[in-house]
Image: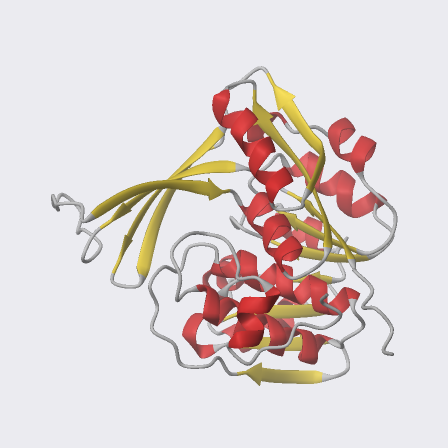
Length: 300
């Protein structure tokens, strides 16, 4: 009888937001007014998206974040619990819960974030809740001091998603094992003219780089090992919101399960590609991915 799969321990340090979606046929031009086709509200925030997506893959997932002392914050805690995420590291602050306003149209999106309680996540909040071992996913919709504290203190695999990109992310990259910018973020962080050039410059800061390239897949670069392009499957995009978060969750999950970076990126690219075929910001469950032909390592 085969041994039971070991659940990797994944910790996400980042934001929780209530997502307000406006669906249109195409994104508006500046100054243009369009009619909405659909309106809906969902759970989001890069930190929460990554934690929930990791839990859906079968990981033992923990979120370290901040929500407000309002009904949205209480609903966030109920939602995380329902998804099997350990929310003991989610602090309740005397503020409103963060919000994101998302326009989706033509397979693309535009996002404006109101950080709310996310801006109050402190180093103390992080250090009080940070576990030992496993993999860490850190993103930048919370104070950078909190992210720095997590990266400095964590003793497992550290994956930094430098989104949104800031000049300070270069210093934070030196504390990570892997950095995962998208193409725009990689160029912003380095001033390079191509993803390949950006990867070379980022390798001066961090041992491994994965640059996501949307429908073109991802570029993997490791010190002393050259580069590889992982192609994405062709899919019909419905909503790209959260694709990067699904990617990071699958990447960290696969690394924690013992895959090498190229293998882990291959899993992550497919997980993110299949996510964009669904509405909302959350990744697919391991069972859903298996039905699409993608087996998640060490999933239950």
